[in-house]
Length: 90
Image (tube, rainbow, N blue to C red):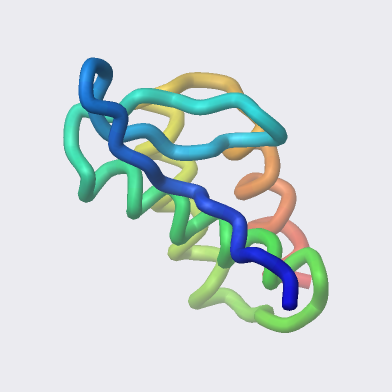
């Protein structure tokens, strides 16, 4: 059985981190922020694989893009969510 990918972790001396892409971790102020970002990366992947679609999903991703843009700026997760929001509207 394949091991699940850990997308959120707590590092004692650093704080809460979320996996953005490959091995790029971003430190968040709160666990809730890290989990929010990780959740929306999973939604974006579901859209891009054709599992989820629609304007409601696109709106949810749009909101996440704004939050990630403010917290992190341009990153792989932001680009993934943007791409998925566009596809969800198709």
